Image (cartoon, protein in one colour):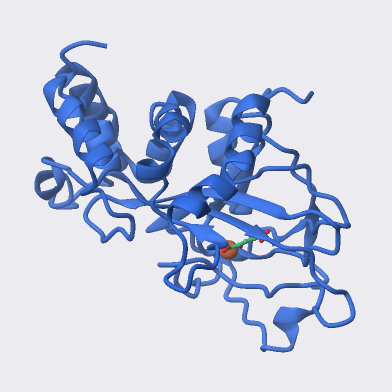
Length: 282
Ligand SMILES: O=C(O)CCC(=O)C(=O)O
Ligand SMILES: [Fe+2]
């Protein structure tokens, strides 16, 4: 099994230049299997209004806290997220989705090149910190049958447009990736990418953490009983990072209004140290 040999600085360099970096084997195989196997049970608890089973879930903290809480305290993931946008990381939503086997005669192989939510059309050659980014994990090894991931490296800094026909065709600059089960791919929201249709006989499972800035909106609902109790215990130990993930950031006015007379990255280390110092127990 491939180990992650890169330092977080190396991952950040890759994220900034390519718009994408892969953390091999970040989620362990038991976690992946339990999550995948829970899809039907979650669907039984929260069926669609017409009784059918949903193929996508967003509010997973309420439905699968035992599996989500360990990720909310995954230091490597969260430290990296803070290296991308600073200590402002909110969990905008969690998506758990699966795609049933698709018919090659009626489904195009390329699902559609796009940029993700809150992106912008890039200025050529200019890196912007993303307003949102995804940490995405396929809960099985990707293959040519179940549909690999396609990315266009560097396209988060290219003023690159594609017509609607081109979005459905393979691109000369694309690279095709086959992440393994348990790998986590972190995407800049402006990188152009596409999934591939699932021509296998099994479901294709996808799980992702969507992260954005704590002063933006979030789709996930953090008002349910589990979210409330997680926030209450985070408050009691002064865990600002966990509270921020769940939409509560007592520091946002100050930190998002620094005056911007110097790059605010220079403040990040101090703010992170303050957050760590604020923890009552660890
Ligand atoms: O299906 C995939 O592999 C990619 C999904 C994706 O890009 C998205 O949901 O935004
Ligand atoms: Fe996407």
